[in-house]
Image (cartoon, rainbow over all chains, first blue to last red):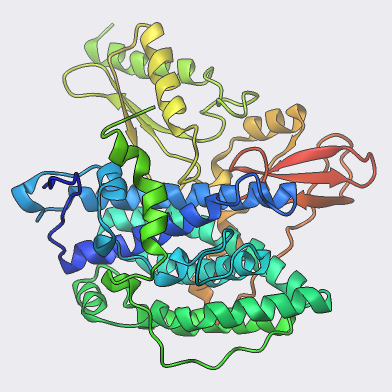
Length: 273
Length: 178
């Protein structure tokens, strides 16, 4: 259904929201990584960040295509991956809040531009996605399992690369270590949402669609702790704050990133190249 | 010739055509060498049904590959062609043929080890598996030395990394095992 503003509005069911959480996390993370294109601290890293973004966009495309074909849309029509990516409004995006926070460019209420933030976010997310994809291999949705089989290999490579950087910065100079610690303090409160179980998770778990988020925590934490030990980083204490992007309630930064990502399709509907 | 034999020879002819279609980004090898072409069969209502598997989720060459497959078969008079993309089982570098590995090496790209699948699924083994940061030693495709180092984990295409030989000092690309 398309409103006068050109936006689509979904009737969000738990299985649809479950898929969109993964798809949107990949998509928005990729959009943030793409901001580094042409600005990487070294050429190799410029290429690495955009290569990872490309993998993540590929994963998001597969998931959005599947989400768009799910029944239960108003009028029963199928939606394309592009319609889902470019014509949904903020409250119908369900990514983790962590991935929408500014990365390279500073924002009014958030620092930006420190490579340590990028390294750390990549590492925290790749491990989470790896744990998620590995469990989705046994999803009773064959298509989702097939997407996971492909994505798992990519997430594993991303995690290795990011872990390498976490160790290099954490166990590097005093300056690199202090900046990585500062990045960790900024990012850590947003990791609680990665393991926050809710009714959408419970539905997916009961239906055999995929794991609930709380089931990912143990594996993720073991790997994070192992790499942090090498990087001489202490695990921060958890805070009571739990972000809510996966419920569609976003930070102040989300509107801006969507505006940048969607402006072309909003201005020139259906434009292709 | 019986009808069945004629159909079978069409499939054989299609495979022969596809064996000559180069990968758009690594033209030294064909799509068949890379294991991207998974199946060729008769489509219902005539024509051919070709099953391709993408190498990486975000590989920008996926559409070009599908178009070059269709174009080559049409040009050989084997159309109409229907191309299907199949994700499972996920593509692995283990599917690159021995001939494909030889061609990669001759082209100056170090082929992947044939043990990507045996490299383990990591997560399934839980805590016992450490994150392997550094790749195994890769043989220089020019001089054969194992004294090489990785310069960049990501390269000119999604499927390659950049290495350097410490003996002949030449940089070279490595097809990442996945």
